[in-house]
Image 1 (cartoon, helix red, strand yellow):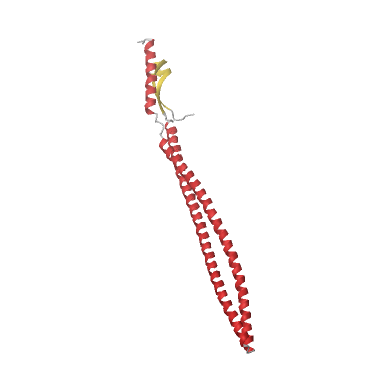
Image 2 (cartoon, one colour; image 1 turned 90 degrees about the horizontal axis):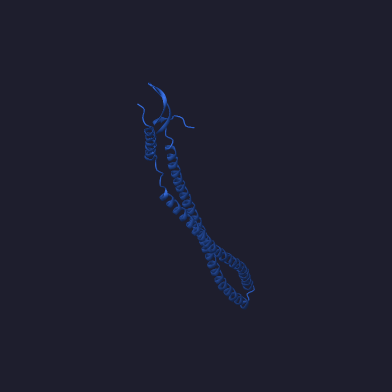
Length: 224
């Protein structure tokens, strides 16, 4: 029985509609990575702000270290002068001791008493000089300790910043790899072997061949 022409058109249109509906239902939706991207941007911003804060902290601590080094140089200069004074004072004291021994050998009482008084004054002055030298040396040691502590703190802060940056970089890489993996899965999902849709062509059946319109299910093992 020969069907009217509109029947073929209806079948063809219905086939197109059915194929379109099935394609929409089978096609996977694009993954939503907005939350991952927001978290990733937030992490990058936190690291950037932390890096700026660390840089400011480093500059501030370097200024402190610079001032401590100036104080250290000043203290070292004072100690150097104290050493020279102590050496000179030691020579003066040794000279008075020699004078005392000479006056005693000469049995010159007046000369001996004068040497004793001078020696007593020199010892008192030398004692004060030694005390100032010890105090200056202790101050220099404290300055050295402060400089070492400041430099150690700077090193620790920079090391912590490097660790946090590496961790953030690793986390960012994982996020980007996840996004890339999801899109690769989506692209792979589109390469399906089966296809359903309307067809127009020459058909061969046990009853013979002829042109016709219909709906076909095909399997394509190789795609170009």
